[in-house]
Length: 185
Ligand SMILES: [Zn+2]
Image: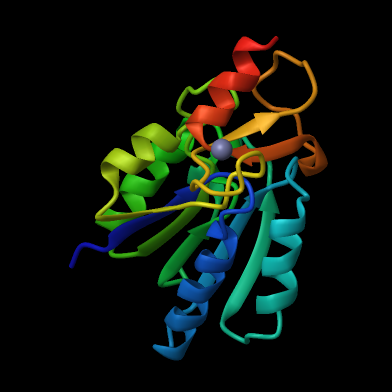
């Protein structure tokens, strides 16, 4: 029987990693064996939270891998459920891997930023969202207006690269506040 793909996405501080952790805990209650992958370049607080919250659970294995890991060489045969945290940082090769896992009957749980700071789909997240059986978009509160849901992560520093790791430089903003800050530059 085919498996399934579930994506939880949202801005910085939207709670997506906590939601991923909740889904993983739920899977373990159903006696599923879970392998969690996260990219080594992302030693973020959110990932550390997941590790500290889940590492005591017996059927859970947590494995940092290179963002461009050769997934065909990663042995997931002992696991029913594959989880990806900070999935936006993986190379596009993860898209085919996720399809293979679903075909092989795995449940795939994915957490990641949907948009980068330039309002573009972040890494493989656009493809993963299209492939998903279910999608949840979570939101933080905009830190500028403190009223609207946030919609995008804004970078306080002026770097152009898509990937700048270091979460203190990012804030969640609604689009009104995002466009206001962008046009002020
Ligand atoms: Zn706002």
